[in-house]
Image (cartoon, rainbow, N blue to C red; front, side, top):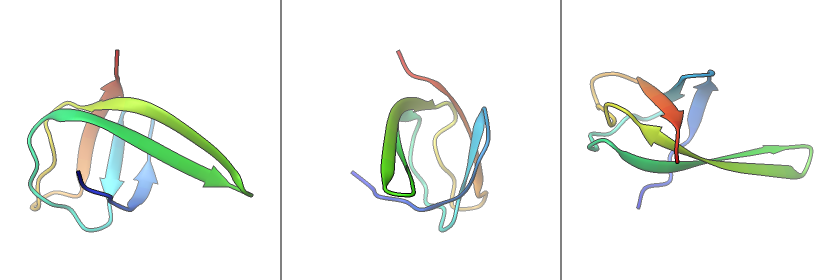
Length: 61
C-alpha cells in the first residue's frame, strides 16, 4: 500500500506530487476540506509512472 499526495484532482485524472511506478490497480482517494473528509474508490487505468505525474482514473465498481 502507498500513501501519495495529490497536487491536482480532475474528473478523470490525478496529478501525483511525487510519482512512483505502480501497475494498474484499485485505489482510494481521500479529500479533506475544513475538517470534513470524503473518500471514494477509483481505478488507476494505466497505473502510475515515475516519469509522468498525471495518471488517468475512472470510478471503481
